[in-house]
Image (cartoon, rainbow, N blue to C red; front, side):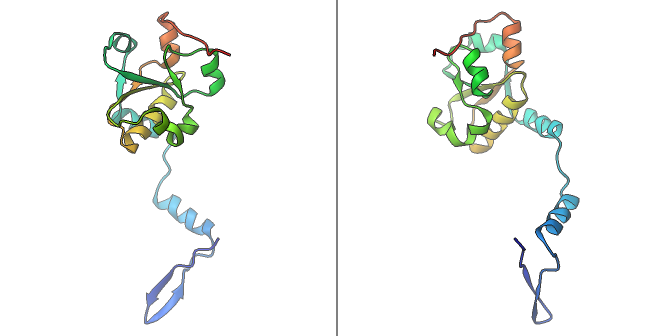
Length: 152
């Protein structure tokens, strides 16, 4: 699709000087540098809270624990009382799981990257009390804490 931006110049309308979307995209990339995954994760980490395994197991607060790993990983083994909501469906289905923006949500994945990006997304969507489980599922297992499998 071509951009047909028209500008008023010297009393005449002129067609956009770019020949195609590719030229617009190339110009955009040159003026707006792309972020790396590491940069996105660092930005997200700076904007979301973290909760340790000890804090999570000792909390008396009502918490919704969201496993953002893929379904097969969740089915095999997950934290007790965790809800499966894979990263790719987060924005689509979160409102079916959490209706109150003030509910404490804890996200986790295998190690922390997807959970951090998910928590940042939830914050951007307006959920106010979002934390990432430090160490993720691997950290939880390394501490010998209980897990469960999905019932078939």
